[in-house]
Image (tube, rainbow, N blue to C red; front, side):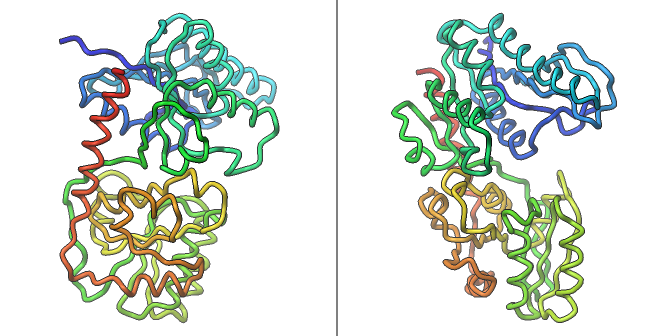
Length: 379
């Protein structure tokens, strides 16, 4: 039986790339999960990537190119080139957006379902192509960018215009649906409902091993809040931190904290693949300790919570509505105040000796999403 092809627009690149195309790892991971779910449901997926080359590209120039990236998955890249010249860089970006408009104009048809990852950059080419070809736009909305950071008025208008043109939505939180209040068909997908193989078990050394895995930055404060909370924990706890970002700052703080801490803290670099799975599964409790302030909290579900649950870890999280009103709220241990001591007290309430299996909840979410996504696309 021939598979139906679903086009999926987004700034996409593979993990191992010679061309350093502009993309976001978290966005790419979620796009891959949705694509894999579509393949599992019987579709073929074509990523359409207007992602231009970054400064670290090892390739000088590349024409439009389609690459097979897995069973029933492939990606079509826009033409791009290497440059450090400001004018040529702007021309490269403009060229990528014009290419996207023309490509959609030539390859889409009326009422065809086209998925797009919501980014302001694609607003004009997607809206222009849609107005001509009349395809149905399924917009994947992870967050409202104007909630996260300050943009000029043009980008805000582009974002709002793209939201208004969508026919169907894939929201990242239940609250985001309510915030936008757009009366159109939708699904809510918190993140990757991915089950990991059992590659390791928590260390049997009499210690309770805590994990913070993810971006390390002062804005969301996750790793730094976890580090501060460690000051209120006893010697039976060990805090492990892995990820990328402001690493030198973190290392310096860890060195200072370990001089007086009872709870040992260690930074173990960036992990990926089976090494990441094995490392995480050697811990007992995952920490989602981002700051509790900011408009983005209503529209951005902490993806690390799903990762921790899928890996079989217990989870401690700040009490924010996008989590407390989600379908997995009962699996989380919360702290109410954005204070290190409150985080530590919440950690202390967890009994690691009780029976616990969070992976079944993630598996259930995956099955529900797969069925609902098929219904949405076939409707």
